[in-house]
Image (cartoon, rainbow, N blue to C red; front, top):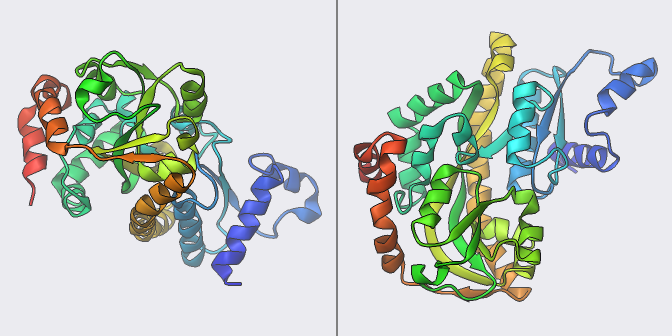
Length: 338
């Protein structure tokens, strides 16, 4: 087994044994079990399982940091949403109980409202377009906005395109009129679907399955990988390929903790993130169609839609919501990046 494989096995076993947050303190209490050199515990919250890209990015990050500054940090990657959903995780980072995580930009709009611009429908064309935008001045501008709000953003990730998943086939925007929709806890997502006549209800992703199963909501939008990973096909078996929004996210930690680190440690963390982020994007992209195929094998039905109809229905939202995210010129400028 490779060093990386042994590391994953060790961390996964630690989590399964319930060592998430208490283990470092417990080991220290018994003297002989404590490491010879003091290590700083870096607790990471992951909503998905240890086999998913959302976890693997942190395993890779930890290995890279260990190569650069050996024995400085003990990375405690807590998976399966054990430390809460996105909102709870962000609050944990602000309080210092959680040290690192991934987050959708939609989740962070509570602190940086302008970040909602990246969730404007049909604004990004593909991954290459996203990479070009986020590697330029716009990405730098938003890293500073997040820093001002208390978050050190290492870089931007792409979860995949969002599609509509429902209890019955949804083919056109008219089909969502009057239906109850689970939406991200984001004003943009709430207003976008309300503009189409839906009744949006913010629900944490960790509670989405139950909300769909019990009828609290009728449908939601999700990436292909999330659809399969969370077994949502069991309660909403129709998958409509709308690809209306590319779900962008960040790899981040507390800005105050970042500022307390030495320059050497900061450099090691940033260099590790610079390698881990492309790794995540590759993994996430590779698993999209494979995840949908697996969901279909388990009973899901793919609904093909006319994307142009959805674009036309959501086009007025650009004009109506743009003032909330920096203005229509900013939206158009992002869309026009070549």
